[in-house]
Image (tube, rainbow, N blue to C red; front, side, top):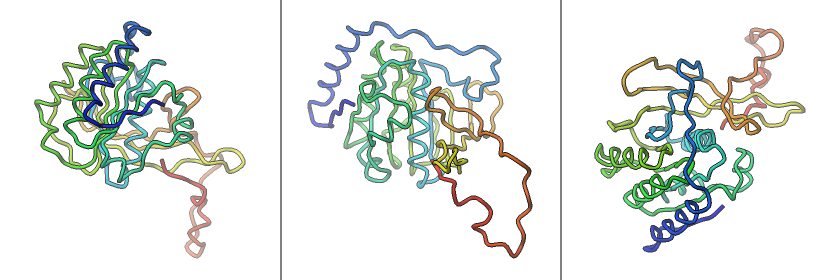
Length: 262
């Protein structure tokens, strides 16, 4: 995992890294989806902007992990550029190597750029999106900021069209606002089912599609992240029937103690 800090030379360093990727990787192949697919995430086309909002400030980690999963799906093995606002890192924590491995991400495929302000974060996104060698871009920011304007989202969309990679803009501590995004999502963490032997379950998310450009169906999906397949999938069905909880039974007996949230 290559890490670039937001010093004055950060954008110049990013340009140098991206030029090296361009020379080594060439143009990114398209990753279109089949028309009429029942995949809940089929609308997440490449070369466009997708807005991801944490349903509550406590879901900041979930919206970042969800965005990273979407980026992994879209990148097709190509490098991912992750721009991380320093305020987001302070509130939700910095990326952790073992955690990225659990998501199925190889550190060599991630270029992490940490920025102190939103303006630099947006500039990083534009620069990365113009590179045809980049598979996907994830920008993570905390809080409201005037820089997240409709004009800024249009600039990002144009940059995404130029390079062909999708941009996932993950925000926490902010309310959804108008933008040029293709889709807008609200993301929350969700309890997951333990694996065999009581091992922690897969990261699980509740993802609500709030808006799709051009109209179309919206809804809420409960999805687990499958790191082996690098994709989201519906949770595995519970084994056996569900038994009503007796009124006098302790809450812990419900079997939810072994769950964990993304």
